[in-house]
Image (cartoon, rainbow, N blue to C red; front, side, top):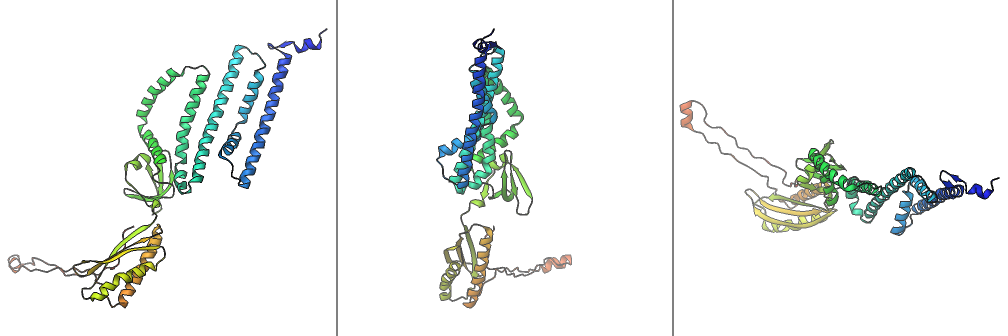
Length: 384
């Protein structure tokens, strides 16, 4: 008759019943306790987020990594701890080792990517002026970081499994050269996107001039950048072409500088000429969002005495600049008329010359021409 002690020591699949019981208990306890801890930390993290509590960076990162822990990884941890009480055949031991190593390094990759995203979000929170730049380059940085992280995870997992990775690295190096030659255009765009992400010459929402193209940046991708032109159509430009051209970024303007000239007649009295700069200064300073720089009687023109005005519009958008310029034009025109100052329009005259000898020989007119005189708006704005 078997005693209960003999039953507990009875071998099953190479292990006594007691060891199977310890392994099962360890597996169940681990698979119960770890999810409870994860759920509790996740609930606290959601509560802190709802209350908008400022947490230390280490605590915030720790709770984030706990939330990014896969449930499959918790199963792997429970299986690993339970297997410490048991002895398996070499083949089964190998299978368990492969499963645990693969799941472990997969979880390390998830934690690493979560840490990178946490760092980017933290920098964005601390540097609010770089929001547009970081938003446009997030996909590029995460894609590039993902390639590096998961490549390292794969190599480390293979190394832990006993695979000799040096020949593999050599083969990948040779294959990589061949692939790089075959897809050098795509790689050029990828490297250019990394350059844009690191150098940050522009961000989403910036208005750019790229050669003959103008538009607002909508999206910065891995291969190309998308612009929305002023006429409405979408412009897609390869990143490699962008880094090779000169970029005018109007989105980074803090203010606009305006320069224009206007002319008055030569018959204007000297005392009136001396009073014009002060009146122009008063007109400019009366406009909102402006900063007066200078106004001078600058040159003697062919048909007028030329004044030059320079001022700044402290709001960078073009509509604000156009509104201020229009208000200054109207006020200046009214003020000069009140001062009995005649604005001098630009004129041009052409002289007609007839050649009677040539007309007599050929019987036709030898030269015809016309005299024209035109007037234009005396107050002009710089091009946009």
